[in-house]
Length: 635
Ligand code: WT7
Image (cartoon, rainbow, N blue to C red):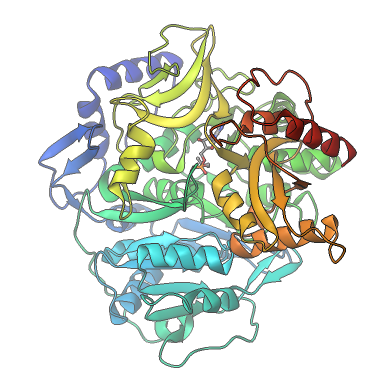
């Protein structure tokens, strides 16, 4: 395996090299891997169309790089340690050879169901080993996996299955989460009823709940695997063949199917994993994300397994059976690197120190955070109480679209500063621009974060809608990838992410489009229109605040009743993560004369700040603002 960056001067040296000769740098990283055929061209790109091609003509299979390439040294090493929801249940450890066996076997099952290279397979599963097995089996045969977080509603699931035209859906009977179970199969049935493309459902038994199995369409995972051979030759893929689709929210419209391809993603997820977390052979690495998000794709499955790591997969939630669960897992498995979201840290911090104090966590070497800005208080608590002051914190900034970590300390190498993602990784060229797109050079500047040149892990398109890809990321500023984040570069050249500058809110590290939530609210029969904004929330980072204009407010209904039914509606249309924390029924929204909602004003009101609204001269009806303020003071 390639060498890791070990010193700060080593980092600066590598960074310089990577910026001056980016292609040579990534070609060198690619040499660690097993290519059936070397590429014809390292990089071909322009951000106008945009076209991004890395290692084109190179032939490979990503699972061959996880398994065949490493098998003779890792055969008996643990690949996945699975920790169940209930600590009383026994976990599972799969060695590299056991995981390989299961992946090949399930790949053969998929082939027997007629799945071919390029077909889409939707996965809607709890955090059980079969989720990782299924995704790797897809990659093995060249099918494109689309994993949908199992907290999404059946409507949201159906939208995603339809958009990708998935042929097969892989799910479970149910799922355990804390002391609750979720009726996964029932939700899938509801969704699949609306999806013509789906021919086959494969169901892994987990909770043992009674479920309906439709003859000829639904099959039990375990039955399909019986007596199936584990002889399987990997499908040969081009570096630019799609690996997966992952849906994410934007500021407008339906969620986008972000598409990642094979070769570049492989090189990038693995390079960033090894360097940022400073993984050493024999370490146990634990990322608490769900595989339904990009963090799970890149830093539970692909990055770690490509690097020969032992990756821990946790089915449950941080507060079950109590708020010490993460630390029990760290103690039990002697975890060396731990990666989680600021929301989880804040929630556990609020439960008090007794859950973390007496745990034996000397094994910990590195702590990581991802998904949202981390406030200083949470950073210090994490550093002092979890890391006992010994462990560097890597505050990793990246996005679904970037495929892997972009701006982050390298553990133990880059001096950290609370709430700073610090410096770009090698090969990454961030630039800060003002609203007009003018580059803000030098230090102590604040503006919009863009990336100047391609990196291997970046998304290639939005599935089925390349124009939307161009429009969303490459049209705001010419020849730049626009992240949607505001950023500050301080006097030391360190980057501090300030949060989204578009109509996207970040709730517990999950991205939500305000338009998406508004559309769900507007489905309510009494709602005429609505506006959704984020507001500061002490645990979630941002909460969801909805202003709704309703008609027919007669004696048959109460405001409270409508508010409750709007919440239920949003739950059903998107899922619990989109449920508004606060809803205010108002008689009108503040609009400009041209009819545009003045969200700036609503954001201030939602934050409880009722003064200094700035320029309100374009406001159509100032009385509306007065009314909203008065009402929100009462509620
Ligand atoms: C958005 C991307 C990347 C995996 C999880 C989220 C925010 C991400 C940080 C960080 C401040 C962060 C940004 C970004 N974000 N990491 N370390 N500090 N903000 O992926 O759902 O695609 O969301 O999350 O606003 O644009 P995602």
